[in-house]
Length: 341
Image (cartoon, rainbow, N blue to C red; front, top):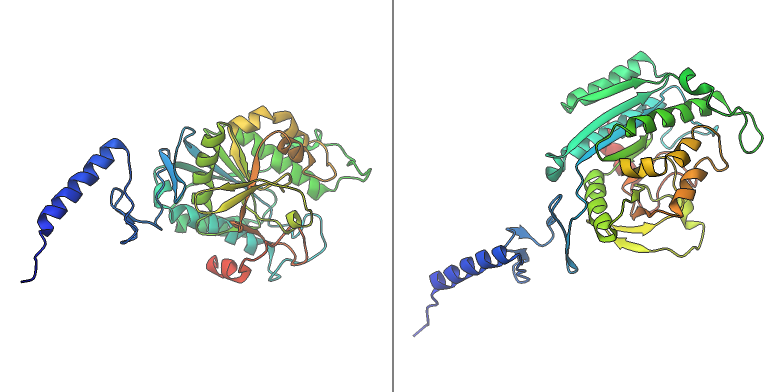
């Protein structure tokens, strides 16, 4: 006669064992069913909980001691200037406003698609210089479509002009476009001082992956908790980082691998505490055009941990031949098309 298993008894024991594990702070992994019963999730789901823990199998759990409280996303826009320092066209050869709109769309989309970021205080600020009224209207319409509020700050370059050296470190005259860029960075740093916690400084030609903001926030919590210090994240995997053979360090973020870098451009995420700690260095970028321009930030990276993801979370849409632009091993067309307005 065929034996009949008592499934009710097994189910009862399993449920109570799961409850006991939850109370004791343990998780159960059912590798046969590819799920974690204590979390009611599949193994490949997002297992981490913002402000509480970071779970990455098979390495286990990192308790979050550095909780992210808020995020200010500060986007510096200037639709009237095609390229700041190059007389070249961008990939796809569109008007500058098209890259700006797709940048903003990608950021709003990344925030919207993350379920765990819905309760985080996220604020958008646009610091604009000299964009036409119809361009500003298009920006406004994107925020309306996402039902998201934002603050528009019209940059007053004259407010900062007398603080900028007229010649750069190469002995050349600083162009007006570069002065406006330095003024915009200065204004964004002043805004950062008002921030509650994290600030993401974004240039208006970086189109982001759907999981970019979620990955950066969760990775910030994870790695800053492990090191017990503030850090800096650069979302782009720049091609010029592969032109050197310097040794680096690798880190495991939420879903991506990250590596230590010693150089970035001016799109990065960090905390208000880090900005205040290195205020003089950051402001020096707004007072003198260094060679390279980002040299003061590179000096900071000698003392602080700065990391970038592999593969890239954001694509810098410059000329296809620029070593400061398109990240390697990424479907650029897909990212571009996904953010069509």
